Image (cartoon, rainbow, N blue to C red; front, side, top):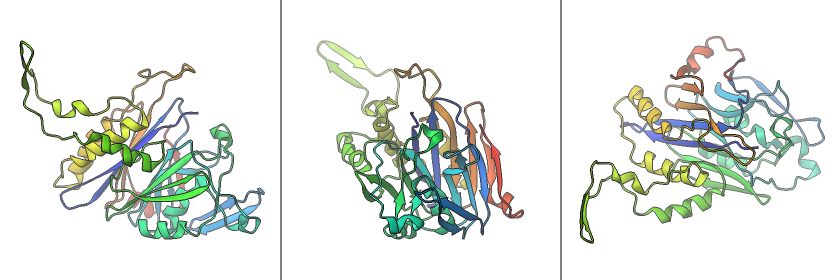
Length: 330
């Protein structure tokens, strides 16, 4: 199974936060635009398959969900709540949760449900961080993900621009304050931060485009060499470096509408057409959908592989109805 993704944020001139994300897969895996109103009750199973952790949403949630346990299941992969907390689940094959004690079963959170849990109960990154320290989790086998045991790590953002990455590696919880606002896939997040020290040459300033090389006088025919040092590949390592670069130099737009447009241009740098890379299994990984989230206004924009333009969905559109809603995007 392959399931890549890139998550990142930019800010506008007034420091408002905009969250972009792509999801890559090898098949058209079902995705749903889903709305959970405040008061929605979330029921989870425990490791014995019995009634487990239950929680009630304190906030309205607009999200993209995918089936994990069954075709009727809606597990949050991407989304935000009306307090301005945003979330992404990205593939992380190294995921391994701590051993669970029998007495913790009833309060243990299935790891694939961390998105609905976080968006339902919290309004800030700091709240999520504190709650996770005392929240037992477990990794159920996911039938619709080839029975893998929740191979994900997670990123949360809030309206202040704070961000944390949540990973369970070798049976230990790691919560990283994320100074980059970027998340891709394996290796572990700390490795990606260390790897950035290999890119101290990166800048958005073009260098003088002429030189003498032996007996040749060379002249650059065009501008744009500032990005020559960026990785061009679509590996998680290459995408992380590009994500840090593009978000570091993103234009600070003067309005929310223009910021979303700027974000859409940046996310185009991570859009993957079919057949550009083909695995040993003969399958190609491609961008199934791209999302843009305006945390201040509660707008979610989604573009699927078969669409040229984004469709806008707004929390305010669903809050007046105050009922659960879900429609298939793919």
